[in-house]
Image (cartoon, rainbow, N blue to C red; front, side, top):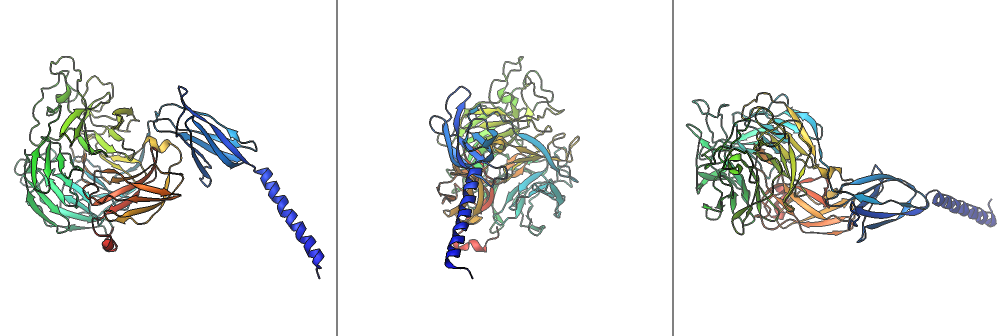
Length: 617
């Protein structure tokens, strides 16, 4: 039997042992301080730089900002080995392995300009298909990609595994269609045709009125009622309520373009005619402006008012003579500029900027070449900017190699990737293939009006390439590697390339751990649990891509959401205006400076919040 004295004595010994172990642990891993200063390469302090201290498995993570003197301090750090990273907007990212002892550690950083070129890698193949002159690619609601060229031999590619699998074939050909993803997750293919490789219609090859929906959940197709008119290469713009404006396109008997337009309502599956284009055409870049009108930039630039169903004239390009498609190699003297012929493909892609302006990237040499001839010098710009407030265009800066019909894609940072396309500058040293197509890639910052050279693609790619933004922040591209317009193309490959932009080389990314939902109504709040950062700097909503050639049938938007943050929880607001945030699928990113999280796929259904549970998303 243990006496009270023995019990108390034993308890004292136990307490002393616990205290001793605590002291030993403290001596083994004392809490210390990590500090230092962050400077630019010319010795100026880097203010509000991001300093991160972490273990490689991210089980331990700390973040702090540099002060007005570039100084930073991380307190209460236990001894051990860590990674210490430093970054700032417009500056390079540096990372070191740091050993922290009892006396702490001091490390200073000198950050030069950001010159990270990103990196390309082959991540898969479209085999057995070789996509050529009539293909499309669309990001699906589950993160996979649907590729096809005529809807009879599609594949579905999973970027997470790098595996492509055949999808169910539809019952009819539909090349050169326009795709768009519906709010219920089905993919709609609209219009197109069975034109031959020379672009001709014959007795058996013609434009079609076809509308069909592919269901990725069941791998099945459903034929919808057709359009009112056949439309090969139709233009498409998504209206605020999810209806689809279809304009122009080629028709029988010789693929001549039409000026007619119609609106397809996915809810009723019915299409009704609306006001005609000012000039026959189609397949022009088109965006829904924040004003509620649709801007089509080809040709001429014009505005559609959905309320009255009519098009009207707007400001013409500063450089309007974009018509001449020149041979390869380029002649020394540019061909004379002229009005683009009816049916000619546009030389540019138009993107809506977050501030409501529109940037057009890409131009033919007929618009920028020296009219005096002889020198071959380029005198214009491949970038023009449209201001809806004044309905006027202005020139912006160019990279040092001008091209037409490049791949153009907005990134979650607001910068724009410009890849490949046809070289329009004979003085440029950039190599081309036999059709003057480029491997070159640039990154354009529309706010700074500046360019940064990126790593070249692995292959030369022309406008039939399909380029998409993935939820993980990479850019995927395939096709467009052979002779333009052939299906399958000569000298083409089946590679799927992924580009890792500079932001994937900037250290620890913020992380979205949980969303309150993935289906939202206009005006609804999103509750987001975030980690691996003390404070997000932006919540970005980006429309998902559905690309035919180099036109986007998705939701061409980058929205900076209003938000508040308390600890690890962020409350962000979906815009209540469907003109600002049209119905459709988006990628949601949490940003820390210019570093995005992995995106989450969400859908704005355009219905009352009480009805959300009935919608398949």
